[in-house]
Image (cartoon, rainbow, N blue to C red):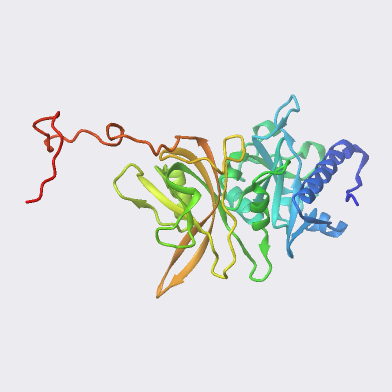
Length: 358
């Protein structure tokens, strides 16, 4: 049975509300195609708590408030670069920003951006100048604006979507199925301990990638792993905020983190092999990845304790290769080595080396 929300609202807001309802219905169908069970919030929850839907997967449930794309200019063109946040509604009461949902879901042309509600409140507190009120909607970037001229008491501001995408708990659900299906599932709230699995994407160069075949050097079952190297300041901050150890061995890798996943879990069951895709998100699981390849790596973090030691490690979920340097196992000496000044040089290049016992 198709679940749909029906239009209820004032006639003067008919087009605006109907479009919002259409976006919610489209999101419902997308969520269901991703495997979620969807329940529509009741009228009281919708009006007073700003909750549109409850999404459940494997017994874990989150509440969401779905936000349609807004126009960002006088031409009324839908804009994915900016979002609107509401501090006060038209009655002067707390706006949807201060509702009770777990996530805000912002529609974009090709996907939905899931934003942790508490993180968005904290972000607006930092970047919006609430003491400066402007006279037009177009000037409301990081300032406040309302429709007093219409006798309304609302107060809104506009902030860039890029800031939302930089928040720790933000993730994206595509309108078509892709590799992030399981990622979205894993980001549901754990009802047992009210803790969210934290996911991040980090960008750098891949070194010593063991994805096609796991590395069995120190683990007989094998470990899928990659060093994500040459991290810039932004990605170093992502890793350190997640509690990961930044390494630097004064080699080609620069600042790097090691992200891995054991083939076998502690309970004896097998882990899912990390997915590997190209820039168009096409599967390249059998492609060998050479050192220096540019990659985006998706991981979650977990805490561990062992023999009196503790720390945070990263679990490898997926990797996107945006610029592949092919892995070459047939490298000759001329390619592998550099000239070493003042090093050993044979006196006769044409003479074969002989090995004699003393």
